[in-house]
Amino acid sequence: MIEIEETALPEVKLIKPQKYGDARGFFSEVWSDRELKSAGITADFVQDNHAFSAEKGTIRGLHYQMPPKAQGKLVRVIRGKALDVAVDIRRGSKNFGKHVAVVLSAENWHQLWVPPGFAHGYCTLTTNVEFLYKVTNDYSPEHGQGLLWNDPAIGINWKISEADIILSDKDKILPLLADQENLFEFGEC
Image (cartoon, rainbow, N blue to C red):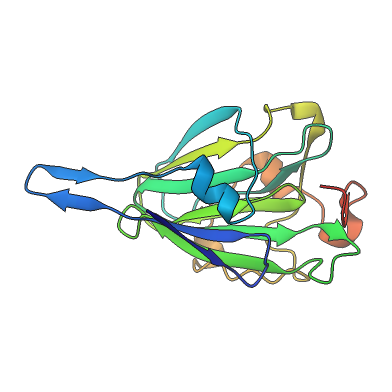
């Protein structure tokens, strides 16, 4: 059984798989095509990714891919805890530039569905964080784009002091949302 909740951005869903445990351990159905489709998530996943961040305060993002390689992502944390963020980057959307931020952890076992048309990023809130995520399109560097993690127009509270943030060189120089030329149009995805 998987519980699926809407977030403040209706296309972004919080997914709560059930865990069934006993003295031996646990079992959890973490993805069900049937249950996701019943919630309007009609994704065809083509790849699973596994990411590791050693240090607390590591931010990866805000990233997205443009069509025809746009990606939807079903994201979960299997070790540690992270703040996971989705930003609506669909021009013409009533939620353009707004974001949702949820804590994903090995403990709460929640997942986040981030559809195409949304930038995605996360910040590790503990050391040694591992993410698993399914994507709906192959990685394509030539279609990859991003937004600056601390864009004041988006206003994300990453729950870590700015002095403690760890970024890649690439993520340090991403453009602001207002300066981004390559965005989605509402209804495009």
